[in-house]
Image (cartoon, rainbow, N blue to C red; front, side, top):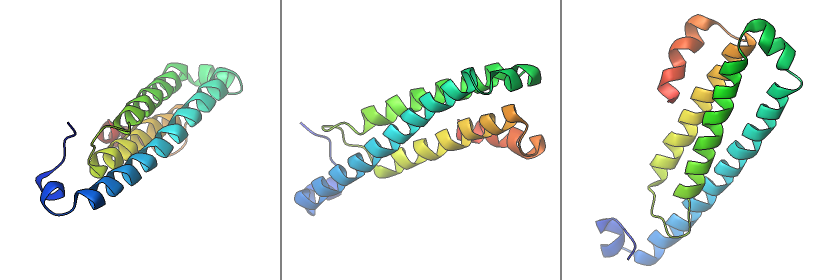
Length: 126
């Protein structure tokens, strides 16, 4: 039994299923981009940026940003499963939140941008 909204059942189940598959496909792509970039940024922080991050005392911040990005990528991939019914807004909000949360931590750990702006923005992504 799949979960569908009342509108999908009464108006057009066929069109609703097409919309779900398209939104799931988009979520899968977003999850793939978040996952692969999370691995790349993690490796970049562990090797190329390690000295810089250690000097700034922000290596743990970088690791936290990578970890949360990877967790959210896995969660988005689960949300986009073939048999799951996810409202497109939930995936969009989770994707945007991940970009805001992890992105602001990446910038803060490298000292890019004003702390007065990025610091308060970070929790809104979470």
